[in-house]
Length: 492
Image (tube, rainbow, N blue to C red; front, top):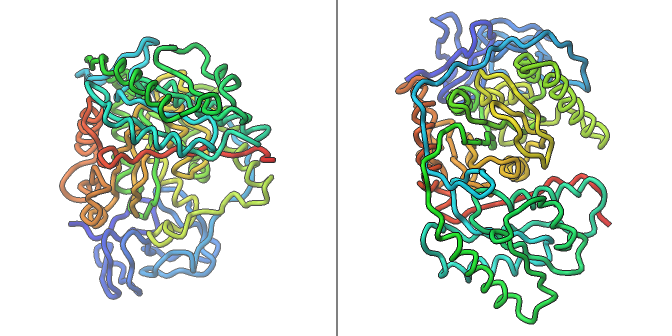
């Protein structure tokens, strides 16, 4: 098995694929390690003068703050970010042709809803309009489990902390919650209100637009004597109705796949994220859609995405998304380069550029065909960018609200959480996959020895299609589903 890797020929650092000891010679004997190098961390393979860029993935990830000798560990003690505030960008035309036809057409067994959208699950959702009824929603979900039958797989409550005393931009909460209630993975949904909240049911309903009134029902708990009894009656009716639904064969062009990473390490951009990128290209070649999000983790790699904009309008949308999020940070007194997290640094990621260049590997090679605003919905096929923070629970919720039927989530540190839709956990390294078998669905570290990226991408697509056809991921089997909403407005 390889012990270290130079990701791009122009890199002046290599990455340790396992813990390396001082004294080891690398780069065909040209470099002797001067310190122990942890797995996922970088070491210099050429002299890097103070002020000179550190190159990884073929691009700068920051600059040295002292002279760095070949064989020395490169991390937070001797390099810093290059990132600053907003930038001006010049449109140079799209440099990426559309992906060619995939040849063999792939299919999965999904639920075709009355509005034409396709779900991969037939769950019944309980969506509170306000956090005050969270416990009622959770009690209803637990007590309704005995009603499950036929094709209905779960009753899921989605507690949250919004819905009242909020003003301004937090109207987004209604858009997120309405998108979850209407999600095609739901065979039915109970919208559960209190009655005195800002987001009352009569306020919430217009956000649903046109909807199937047999599939979405409402209960205002202050209006009834026993909300549990009334809620269970509605849930039983929803479950009985949804249970009649059957899976049918549909093309992979109906797939909408969310892509996210969290608890990343120095292996993320070498194993899991490039494998997800291969899968993204495969789905898009079938005519499907993938969505990349977490805007701050595009900082430092945004120009790579801008070069792939399908036209000038999309380029301008990407520029505004990047600079707009930088303005959001600066307006709140925060620098645009304040990342990675402590866990990222422990795993070998030194700067935000380092993280971003690894993160955007998930986008594959397809043209970017559109930008979706937070709480918005997919309107085009192909590779989409979703304007959203990087926080795992917020961004995966936004992916589901945008229409993703499932999410691919790569991780190097591990996490048990799940999103409102099935979440395939992909490990970046073998130790994590071996240690956390009850978290990880797919180990992408096989590309270091056993598989090519293309083979691993095909295997991940096979797993995705099985999940889309009904196979449950580990977090589903544990009944793990999470929802969180980005709060930007005023709370009174």
